[in-house]
Length: 307
Image (cartoon, rainbow, N blue to C red):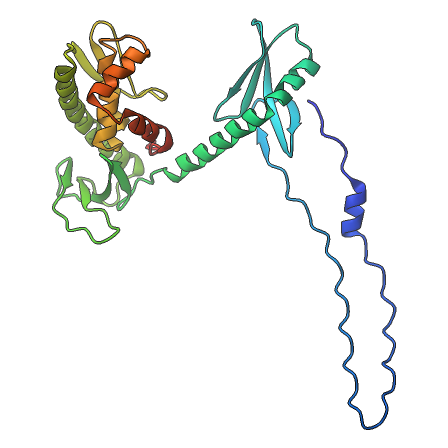
């Protein structure tokens, strides 16, 4: 692993060495009688040297190389692979570099430096996304809040309820969600029990709502959907097969109906254009004119961590 340069000891000494002693102040000169004494001059405060802010570190869990990019230290995982060029992957864990076996370490580090601005920007984006995901983690208990169709739903543990029942009659106060989901569990229920009950309810709602939207947009686009099912994929919101099969991620149920419609229309449009050409996007635009806005929402809004 490459090492960073030695610390600047001169800076450390200037910060932490004892300050030179100040000679004792001399008594003020005697003033003539009849005049008020002169006020003593205030002692001069020692000048405080500014301390540079510590650099940010980005470290991959499997890092075996380290490099400084500007003011930041990046520890990355280097993999020797069978390919012709050097590749960079910035994911949730950090930076991975894939390089041919014949490329020297010096050339690899030069390539990393040349991509330094892009790498740092992507690493920071990943760090911010991770922070947003952590803030979206749900604590499974009475009173927890779960997003449903773009609105906030308060969980209410209610042993009198059968299964899970959504109450939409509540008169919401300003800033208070108007929807409550009454879950038929006692207040002593374990978090896992609450999670499983809510998951089941959300998936049933997704099956019903997505099915209705698929039927609507299949008719609008003039395509035939042979089969529809839910998925729990970690990286894909939906998929379409040439045989007319559509799969949609059930977690889409957290978003508003406009976003759901975009994903449904996107997958059904593939039954006419099995690609992402300009013609494909024209098909999507014909039924969802503002699809670009919905697409941005999917990227920018974190999905609640339901595990």
